[in-house]
Image (cartoon, rainbow, N blue to C red; front, side, top):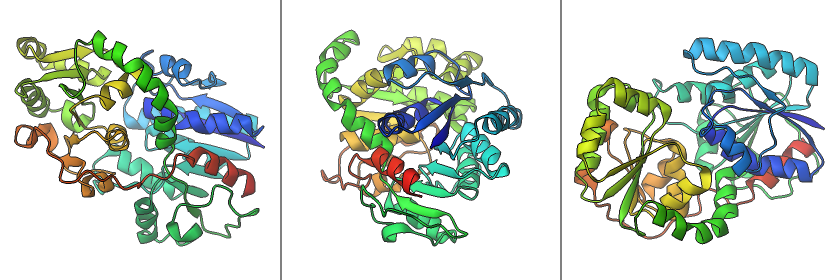
Length: 379
């Protein structure tokens, strides 16, 4: 069996890592394609080494561009690779332009598509990620969902070929799976939970050194990330986030996404950050370093979907600078609070007081990658 895996952005590297390991252990040939959507070494190259991902068999190097131009470049290059490699499956992750380009190229060539993290919805049609994930789901062959809620979202859209009633499927699925004419919907659990569990021991050993590096102590600082265009590309909103962080009264560690760094410069906001003695700026961080800072933070302020979920898995309260989320389970459980674009309600919501200490196991049992590989073999 041969699988072409398409990734292009930092969250996808994290999601692909445990699956790639299981593919290798199962003797399945994986052709790894990096579109180059994230091309900064700290956002891309360093992650391959840290996560023990195979070096890309193909690196398309598409770089930054408008959505249409970037997706078009990927589509053309991916089609050529798939024609050359003739895979049994194309495996795509998440909701980026790389996800959509990989799915469209495979669909036009009648190659089965497996979408990891299928069924996730924010119900905000303005978000490019929402467009990407919806379109990808509707051309995929196997919809590999991380939660029961994701399965229900698909069910509401007319997908009815659901394995095990949407409950977490057995690690070893039926020996043969039939699809008929409709995609198979499977709750496999969340691959990011696999990675959090795998990294747990490393976090424990490295945390003291990492906290010392930033001169902070456990529960005595806030981690913040902001990168979505609806926050960064509007001066008033980005300024609102910075102003709110500056008034929290605790140290705030703020790794800068390249987009955020650009707009902070364009809007001349760096002097305001320099005046705020509590904000510590860093370059984009590696997976273990970021996860360690997250695990030990008092809370996280973010607009990242992945970090909302990782915060929940690590038991860290989260304040989300958005009006909606793809992960309503984290809000319903009381661990995540939506504080609006620009962090409009940041000061009213901090310090975060938990409504309850329980964290239901929404995201599976840490064996999502194993389920995915078994499903691909048995389909």
